Image (cartoon, rainbow over all chains, first blue to last red; front, top):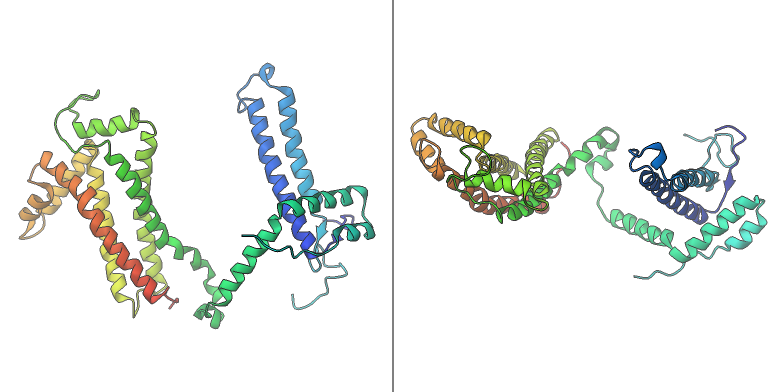
Length: 95
Length: 270
């Protein structure tokens, strides 16, 4: 993580909401995306002409959407959860 | 079970006052909207509270009291091996009962595509090829048996190396040795039931091992195998041991074994 990565401190309860729902969304879309991709390519056994393009695009899109949401959600954090040691709320202590 | 809403925080006002991009505030608004309706986080928090309340009521274990957890934590997964043995025993019992619907312990000649095949062999072959989910059922039974044997043995090693067999748990250690032996008898008797080449020659070895016992060898071979050469009597005895005698005995001994663990508690590491 570089310094350009944005981080937003949110209340703890909101942080839980973000974590739970974005992870849930990411799991469902990524798994669903692979299922769709599998169906479009008949488990990667279909010939190139037999591949259902809209379905394959849908699958890849779902996987990308899941990854995107998961990555996007990582910018929200609760107080005391620093991603780098130089954050304001992460004072050096015995750790 | 319904829970009261504890989350009084005004998310809307908070999102408005905070300096967020359009995507960020939309993202948070959507998630808060979902949270208000699905309330997954509220229920997770309920579970979290329950977990901590239960644990707060436990007395400190010796590992906690003397701060040994940092040296000992890697043993903890192995404390599940006893439960794992019990679980595989239950799976084997259920799948075995279902297999029993289709199996008959007869060494009489039968035809199912193999020369010299018997009714027992053909029953097992039929279970695997003709019966719906039969291949799965027999595999489940076999795997449960293999896993149980392995888990019971590893459980014994865990008990030995953590010193859990020591006073006041000597009796349960001895019962455990009996159970380990009975598990192997269970496995052996089941191994003979398909009455294929593996089973037949395993039976032959069994007879010869019995005969090698001093003084009582002949008698043991007669009792266990119904004679000195293998046949219908052998198969029938193995079947009866496997589905009648051993289930009663082993289930009872397991109940005593678990009952003692319940009464005496999980042993602290020595």
